Length: 314
Image (cartoon, rainbow, N blue to C red; front, side):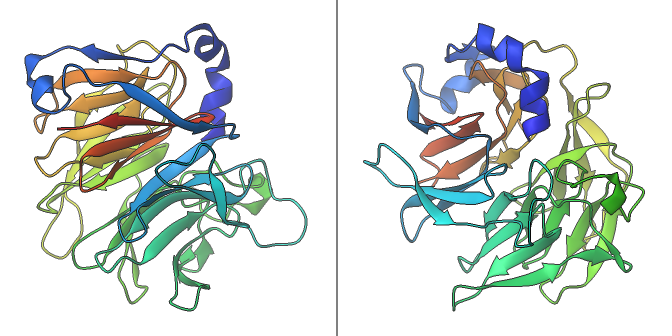
């Protein structure tokens, strides 16, 4: 999210050294003590929404201001264009962040998109075109779908903050919701309690929905128990980032097979155990938007401002 980058530009410039901060010995079971942070490619306006394509062995990620999705493969020194336009197909310009943001693969390997400019959640068809999954709630268009997580049954949970709106004149909803849409396109509201819902992820058993809030006065990661029908019960704070130093706010997040939560936030990427204890941080020295697991969980990819980083996992 470019707004976060602008907000924390000066601290990021002042501290661009990457390192790993170890706060608990339990981190050694996740990150090798000798793990290094690799820079794979750089030169982007604001890299976001990474997803690993296992079939093609490549990383796909959005550059939101450029309205482009890039791809990177092992051995590449630069990323190449995968899709342009990625999130706005209209005529002329639409705001500063018109492109796709969050990307995700379902169990069948179908690529899904959160699109800022076209204000929808969509997916890639076998013929190479996009099809809209959802673009409104009760007849009112979404603000700018930001990030998404796909349940085992194909339900898509996604957030809808205002960051990609081309201007207030385009707003149709007076809140920023978290939604669920079924594979048949039926949309339901999960919660409207957050001011700036952003990253979203599911626990390994699909019973908890995590939502990161990129809101300066209340920078938290929330946990919502999910009922059997996919709706949510009252949420609780899983982790509060208010006392952490460093550029950035809670943004994108993913959960590994053991329930550990990897969330971007102050300083880079936070690593939390299933109970919400902070085990350590991958310090990127700049606002970091999102993360993705790759190569069957052996690598963590990070979209960190203008570059793509990678860290080996155990």
